[in-house]
Image 1 (cartoon, rainbow, N blue to C red):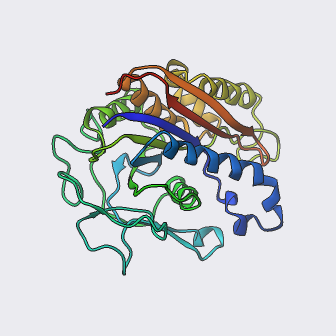
Image 2: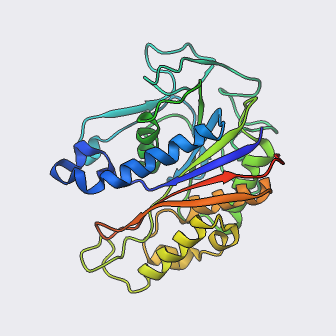
Length: 294
């Protein structure tokens, strides 16, 4: 069950065109980059995609995965997994409306508490427990919307993990390593879709107001993503990240922990980097390039 690829995408609500309204064209390049990054996960052969994003608690979420953009002014629900008329209980969650069909449940999958082989890797020291299904946090809601736009070429299973924004570097790295050690319950390769925004302090009109450190911070993250630099991501300071209103630090460090544990050679590609509304948006792809898998 090797980790073969990862995608990094931001999670602004305005990425949804109906929410952006007349400003929708301003984020067209961002949407296109995210679509390419998600498509690259399938091209790498992933049969399971684990979405990781900031949430109130560090936990693996239980399917079905549903959320609504209503709090942001759009009465639209996005779901991954079986719906009211979808697959019977006992099937691995699949993309609602993707046409990919259900995937038979595999040993150790949902439902039930995590065992020693927990697919979410939440057996790491200090990690959270599974949480019941409910409204998705914004990061995973946008992640669900992003994958809903790109139909998988083969039946694809989905998992969702939220990570607390104040989780320590060691805890994030341990969570990523646990994902590799235990792996999603799947017979095939798997990938990560990591959701997170950069600093929200780019300029006086930014949501977090202006902070002169924001540009250098996001440039450093951009270089780390472009170079698949695990050490640079793990070196991000949680305190500075919080001061700069960075929403992606913890999730990026889960990615770094997973790739470090997986080992091998990785290629990074930065697909997008902008801050149109004072918030840093970064899109990247990481792909395993060696033949050794774990």
